[in-house]
Length: 101
View 1 (cartoon, helix red, strand yellow):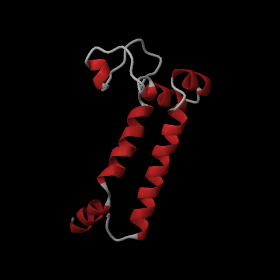
View 2 (cartoon, rainbow, N blue to C red):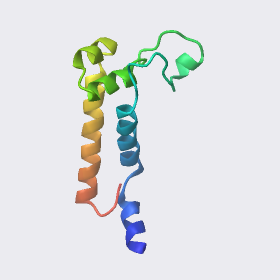
View 3 (cartoon, rainbow, N blue to C red):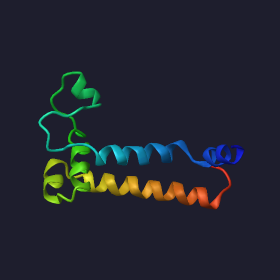
View 4 (tube, rainbow, N blue to C red):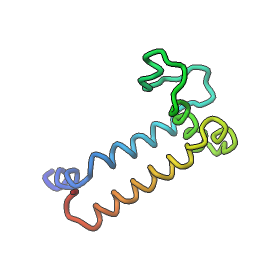
């Protein structure tokens, strides 16, 4: 049991967050008429936000619909690449150090 807790202590919380975010993006239904939003501007009643549609666009990207993804939000490919790059860097950091930080 101590070995398992020692391994879990070496995994950074940021890595867990980004992997969880990608899993969540994969399970979003971008074709549905209604969608859940965490956007503070949308929740305050504003109808325009520069980030709105990014999650659905990234979900379309995971499903291989590149044209619809690009038309919904052009920065989705860049955001997806940045998240993947950050995950890779965090995994490299675990492999090269005994602890995070």
